[in-house]
Length: 222
Image (cartoon, rainbow, N blue to C red; front, side, top):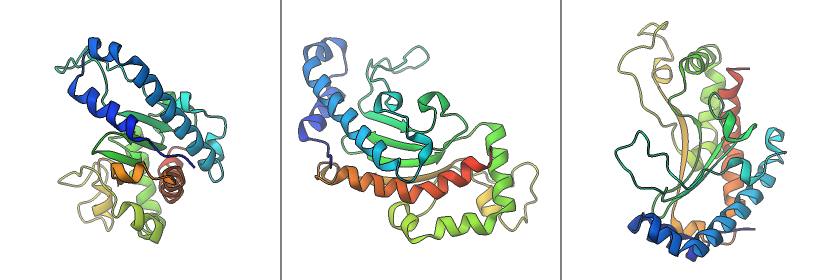
């Protein structure tokens, strides 16, 4: 069982206050230690997910984690580094993240989360999701109402249209679900919980509850 240590949180908190190359260079050893801990944690989580989702069996943490360096070319914020560790676990690794739902981990002091779903999916995928909901609304509602989903995620989250999406009537019986622009399941985690010895097991349990939701979204494009 793996957890995230206090020094890793301390490094990320300090980085948020000192987001420049000089400070980062002076604290490279702390970064490397924190990164290795996160890699080990993600590898253990992948092993746990593999028991119920064979699509990610061949992945390693290095396939899934995000670079800490920010792409600042088109951003007004020129801070050079991300102030969190993140990973997106899904078949094909990060290269396959457009058009598929996976398992997202964000480790950020005061804002940790375990999540999945479709964030502002591109036009072909969102159309496919809405069609899948329209055809199989009862199944989707059953997934959202499952006790494990409710326990960890509560309600599905995401921005919504103010009117009916193209191709659907305003009085469609499933209009409340069809109006979503993102289809997200989000489980927020306190820093103290991430530092408990069983955090990797907790993470796997959360993602096991997420699995049917992600499968429904992915099936729409199969």
